[in-house]
Length: 270
Image 1: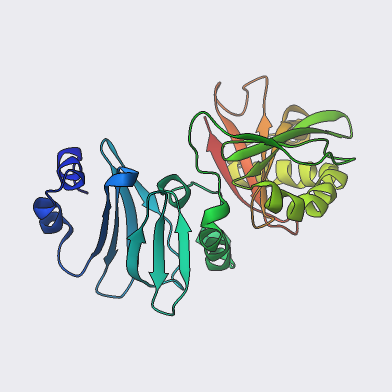
Image 2 (image 1 turned 90 degrees about the horizontal axis):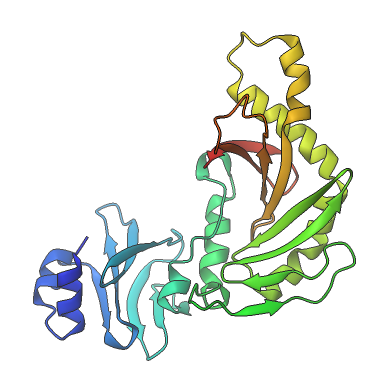
């Protein structure tokens, strides 16, 4: 990746070293008005990788395989990428580099469709600028009034026996409105989701020498506290464990589910 000095020089009008580092065959757009440089590299097999570089940082852009970039342009507010089939996608540097959640390809047969949906909606993604632009979504009888702040919209909901934080990841008001019926179903089925999630965590991490008593007690000590709904309708649930018996203090499991509520992957967060 070009270093900060090379990026700063390019933004100030001297792009010779940047062009040498990027190499022939790459697409590059230098945008002083945006204080950033957009670069798309194409590998020998045709796969493209993209980055947006600013003085001090370089961020990756998740390109779908279906969108082969042939041109990068810009105006005073945003970049515009045009594909070989004539489609165009515009957005600010922060929108193009928004880190939206998606279940990894290994566990997600619809991975490419999910990446493509988010990429084509770049202009609607939160731009991550500070101070964040705070907006409220219309009040929902089940979900309350989600508040959009930065890349997350959050609210809290009541499920049997507990209060739960609910987040909508990288979704503006229009996308949240589209996801609301699905989110209501998740709340209604949350006890089933919780039960399957704790079983999935146990199956993933059990080493085989645990007692039946430990296995029976495990669902009782794992407490769900946050439900994160992805743009695709897939979602994840974060579980806390106050006793720190199964996970070290400061670490907790997060289970990823497909939209049909099937758990498929678990990560350990910190």
